[in-house]
Amino acid sequence: MPSAAADYQAILRTLVDNKVNFIVVGGVSAMLHGATIVTLDLDLVHSREPQNLQRFLRALESLDAHSRERTDRKIRPTLPFLDISGHLLLTTSKGPLDVLGTIGDDLGYDELLKHITEMEVAKGLHVKVLNLDKYVEIKEKLNREKDRAVLPVLRQALEARRKRQSPSRGQRKKRPKKS
Amino acid sequence: MKPKQKTMRPKLAGGRKVSSSSGPRNKNRAYSEDGVDMTLIRWMLSLTPAERLQVAQQSARSTQEMRNAVRGR
Image 1 (cartoon, rainbow over the protein chains, first blue to last red):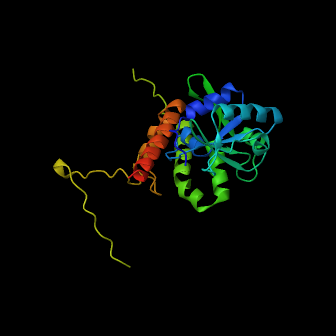
Image 2 (image 1 turned 180 degrees about the vertical axis):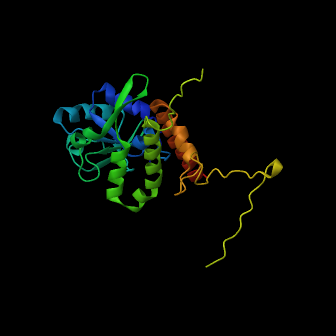
Image 3 (image 1 turned 60 degrees about the vertical axis):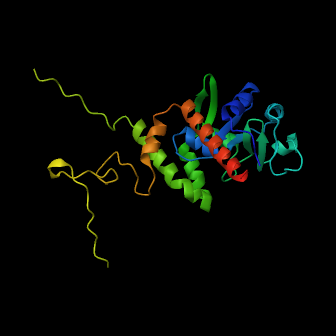
């Protein structure tokens, strides 16, 4: 089981410093959009372009990443491991990290790029974050018990965000002053 | 059909009833109809993305610490 305290900022900074192309997805992406859910790991979808895989592997090595499915020995990620559409569940020196080739209906990095927002998640640290509406759509399609459990919170957060962003709501027209 | 139970709502001085924050008329209600705590969502939306990441990080740490403590008993 992962023992390192979660330090998402440190993981993200290491990836950005190594120029890794990735998108933050999963529970952390939802929280970054204001959803009130708790998650214990950071989920990423990475670009599987060969040069990006090299950079990603270098970053993962510096984070001492290894599989958390085997507890008897450290199995470190390799290039072929990263070049798959499946999920790689890792533990790092900065907390658990799930590396996902695709999510939902076989959606990879390139497909998801149309559904991201760039956010500054720490001073000078800009990352791509999956949009909440896309995340809700993926969860609705998956429709597993664990997806259904969080959907009410995700939908309410999405709705609350829309209300906040809508310029017509909550704004009162200024009345001309009576002279 | 069960007869509807009359709920007793507390009254303020002068006989005014205390408004229910979860009532349908209250736009800033505490809970949505499906039971989601809207006060927490509004609080999260008032934070910057960097602050939200801190919240995510802290909640993951706290949960993990509690799990470790339970396991260590």
